[in-house]
Length: 276
Image: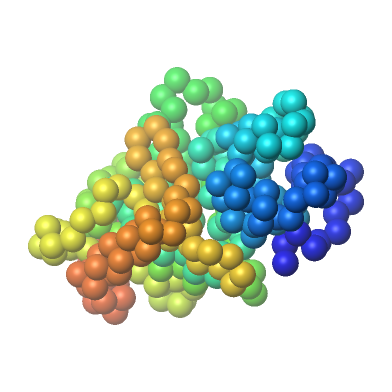
């Protein structure tokens, strides 16, 4: 049970948040389930905050302050605990990636961040942050490359990526950068570190997912979905919406080429771009 974890409250702002939540909840004579009912979530979800497993959230902190009569205590702690080198809308999803058992991604336009080369990541960042200085750009690039370390460890998640054929045809960063990127994805697939499928143009009309989607499953937590569009993203945890996204992803995966058939298409697309 997440709430049973004993924390040293002084190891991090998040640990302090979790310890304070547990202290004030118990002082109010509430179980995790009872507090969850009052703030519209499950008791297990409260336990994740108390165990410092989940990153505190502003809206939830406001509800907790209201129920526990703590003024703005949790809202202030939340601001301290939310520090991240990633965009605020993506920070929760990054932390969930680190615990995920499986990550199933659909990419309609760009190579997913976990599979990007440094040059490709830099090209995307420069494109989306056109007015940012070099230091800010490099900070985002380093953060993206740091995320990829989860694919190197012995407990790495199973990563299954479905790439729309558009991803192969948009030369982000120029031909040389794009060619290197596609060869990198193909190499990872051949090393059996990931599963990759390509959704060809001919099959794309048969399925529909509105933008990028990442479905994550865990050993001891409910699955979640992260979706992203231009300028922002959203973490979806409502069970019905998660199940709907899982069904949509399954349909996309069924319509795409098999992993074995996708590799030659990746190779041929890479050959269209020059080798540096």
